[in-house]
Image 1 (tube, rainbow, N blue to C red):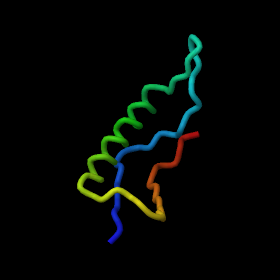
Image 2: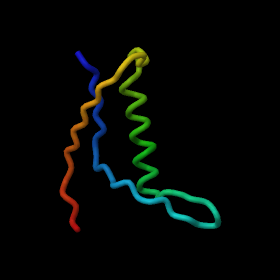
Image 3: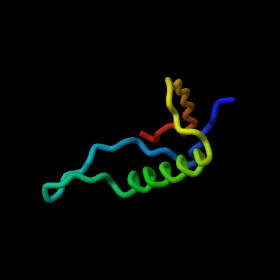
Image 4: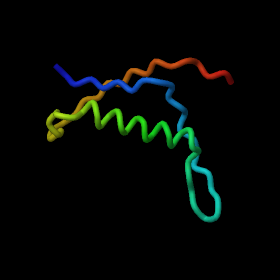
Length: 68
């Protein structure tokens, strides 16, 4: 059986970084999603062996159609 990882919730589109005072940053909504997704991935991968060979990835996105 292949491991399956699920990240619930709305996935925001990846924005361009904002530039301010000579530094680049991402909007807070996107940064919050990044941190949440990383936490979920780490939690769901606990106890599984690290990957050490070729990897095949299948991604299924179930999301609502954007308004614009």
